[in-house]
Image 1 (cartoon, rainbow, N blue to C red):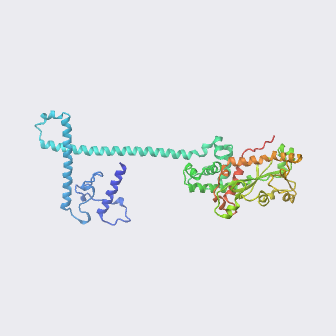
Image 2 (image 1 turned 180 degrees about the vertical axis):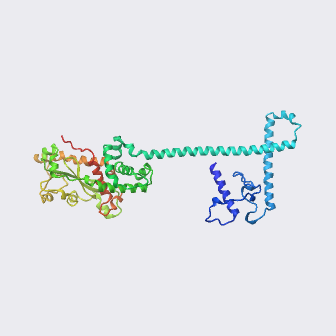
Length: 463
């Protein structure tokens, strides 16, 4: 109904402007009025009476006087109306005759037939217009009520979306915090937000807490930007910009959480299982892990990132953990083709080693000569080198190393499980966009995920 009325109103407005035949550009059409003298009956007809000659002004428009044709149009409209009323009267008479109303005609024989017909005609016309007006009002009222109901429902849905990830929704709800952020408690999440809040960007679309939640959900759940845009009621481009901006802030502010501890601190808190096998000399346990990426279009980049071990294009990180189970070093991302030895010797890891340190590593880290130059030591599992089995001494050493090296595998597994973005296939854009310091997005994501893991309880048993 509203759509029909809108079309009628638009058509009537267009015809009125055509009748004015004036240049109204730059004028406010809301203040334009047409005198009643330009209508045949002295006033405009109703909107739904499109056949009425007064639906559009026609008298004296554009300097013309009222013509006989216009008068003829009015008389034709009157005749058409009379015919319509006559048909209504005949239909009413037939209905009355069928219902037995004819039996009462004797009481009205003395009535004037001309006056009776005139009154009947007026009553039919009035009743018809009243019925049309009543139906129109009823239809418009029903449509208005439907629109109000829809508006209330939409407002309720928007309010629900805006409060789902609000800060109040996470208070004293550690399970929800763990699911969406990977952090064990709301208190740790609040401390992290307080630490980052002064440096987070100000956005009209989302407050600072929701920006942090959006970014943590991207890291934790590896959900698409489309999902995040629907979840937070923003555009995909806005969600992407927020993730990039917040990760930049987290990378700078959380970099101190990846700390290489002093030797005396390591020795004071050395777990007993390390003291039993290696004394207090163990400084770090190292290993590499790879993250899948999209296939680069550049042939050189494709070759540099191809991993023969994973049979996929990857980037490789060198990670180091302390005997206490915290991440003490994370390198930038390197192409998956690079060897563990080359990565260890060229990523800056050796700058943290001091004389007397002991490094535990896997068989691929053949760096004894490199560490020997700085008077440090490395222990790796023994090679069989063509032998059917290891010697008893080598076997015992290998068991000791494997017994404590398992912790670095558990930490890598924890990083991947908590922040599943590192377990998926990352877009190639994460490797291409570097900032002024030479860091790309994947470098920042790797550090931020390890820093967040350091906020969680250690996986190493100190007993």
